[in-house]
Image 1 (cartoon, rainbow, N blue to C red):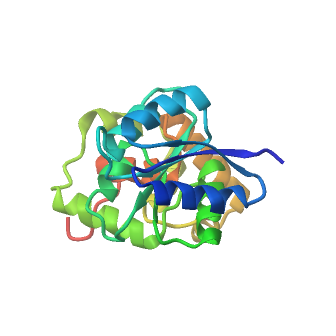
Image 2: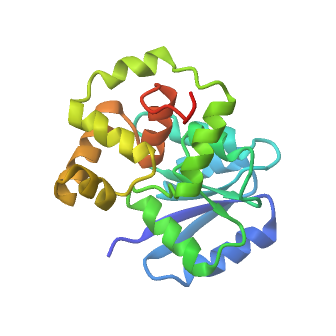
Image 3: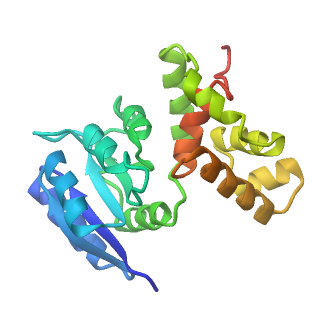
Length: 223
């Protein structure tokens, strides 16, 4: 079994140490380093090459959103970022997802939830719960929902079925639910999702959902 390498970035010592203890006790997960702020996190990612970064949003020197952007920005970036937040309705969650995060997790998550989140994100899936999807829609509506033209052009690379699958992914449906909706095998949906991510140069389902809203492929209700 491949070990998932994790970097924890948080300016609070107790949080870093607590998460380190919880994750190191989990099979197949190893904490390879800790960072005290966003700038430190960017440097440690280059040095340690972790698979997943647990990133606090609010940190001194360089915040978690900008650090996420720098870490996930390069085209060949393989590291996934899981944002840590104190509040479920954190105003910065949407910006973190736009910056390249694969999902978010509350700091009071249980050890089991934390480990599961790390495994899901490391596998290339995304923590895109229905509540997060709703928040994406609401936030995009609030911002005016103006499609970004350069992104919109990239939708043309998708087939009709791939466009349909992308739309359903953005609505928060799982592969199984999409397969049922389209009356196809779940493996077929997985193949479509993989091709969508490849064609659009996206990292995971979270980025696919953000892309779908930002191009106007999926419109918030009432817009």
